[in-house]
Image (cartoon, rainbow over the protein chains, first blue to last red):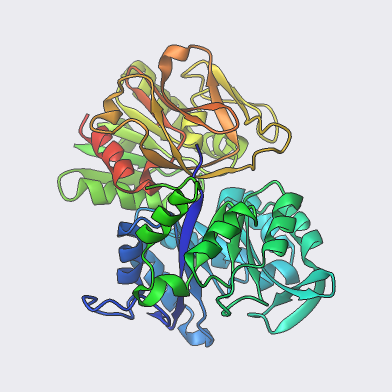
Length: 251
Length: 208
C-alpha cells in the first residue's frame, strides 16, 4: 500500500538554515546538509529546501548545498525558491536535486512548466501554489506572497496538471505561520479537482493537523517546517501518531 | 571491478551516480559514460532512465551503436545489467507512453499506463510503497519482504512470462516492480532514493 509522506521543509538563506532543528549535539545548527541528514536518518520521506536567498549574487550558493546534501541523503530531495527557467532547473537537477518546485515562474510563464516537464519528465516538476482566500474562492499569489495574480487557484491547479506538473504543493497563505492547521477546504477542493498528488503546506501547529491534512484535506503528503524544528516533534513521533490514527506511513 | 552507469541523456542521473559511489566507496570503480568501449570493458552496467519511455528510447538510439553494445553486453555476453525505472521498462518489446515505441526486447512484454480505476487513484504513483518479494532474486539478498521503496511512475511493465517477476507492489492494481531474468535485473522503484534498503540493493548488485 502506498504510504502518505511526511516532508520536513528547511528554509535556506545564503546557504544557511534560517529556522531549523535546535539540537544541542549539532555541530553547526545552520548547516542545511547536516539538518537534512538528521531528517532523513529520522525517517523523513523526502526533504524539501526552500531557498529564500534574496540577493542575486548569493543565489549560486544553493547549488553547492544541494550537491553536498545529495551525497549524504538517499531519500528524494526537492528544491524550490527563485527558479526562473529551464536552465535553473537543469542546474539543480545536475547538482543532485530529485525534484524542483516552481512557483512565480509557473504563473508568469507557463512554458517553464510545459518545457521542463517535457525535458526532464513530470516526476521532477512540482508546481507550488500560494493561495489566499478571497470571498468564496482562492487566488494565486506570487513573489513569496507579495503579489496577487488574481488567478483562481482551483482553475490554475487544473491547468498546471495539464501543463505537466507531477505534483502540486499547496500553501495556504492565510494559514502559513499561524500554527492553526492547514486550510482543509482548499486542500480537499484542489485534491478532488486534479488527478496528481497534492502536498499540503501552511499552518501546521500540532500532529493532529497532519492527520487532518491527509484524512480531511485528501493530501498525499504533508509538508511542515516549524513543528519539526527546535525539537518540538521528531519525524518518528509524527509517523507513530499518524499510524495510531490509521494513516498508512512508512515506519 | 568496474561498474558503468550509462549516461545517454535520459534525464537526471545524479542521484544514481551519488548512490553507487556511496556504496562502492573506493573498492569499486564507478564510471559514468556513453563511451561504447568503456561499456564493453565493464563488469556490470546500470541503465537508468527518467522521463517517458519514448524519450529514453530515442535518447538511447541517438547514440550510435549504444543499443547494439548493450545488447552484446547483456544478451550475447550475459554480463550483469541493472535497469532502473524507465531503464527497466525499456527491456520490454514495446511501450505505449506518448506513442507506440519499440523497446530493447530483452524481456518479452509491454509497458502500459497504470490502470488507476478511472481516477480513483492518483497518477503518478509517487511515494513509498512496500514490495512483495515473489522470487528469490540475487539483488534482494538481506532485503526483508515488505520493505518500503520509493516509486515515481505512471506506466508499468507487464512481462509475458510471469516467471521473470521478482517483486510486485500494490497500488490501484498489482504492479510488477522488479524483474530478474538470468543476468538481467530491473527495478521500477528507485533504489538510489530508497534509503538504506535501496542502498543495500545497489550493494547486492555491485557484489554479484
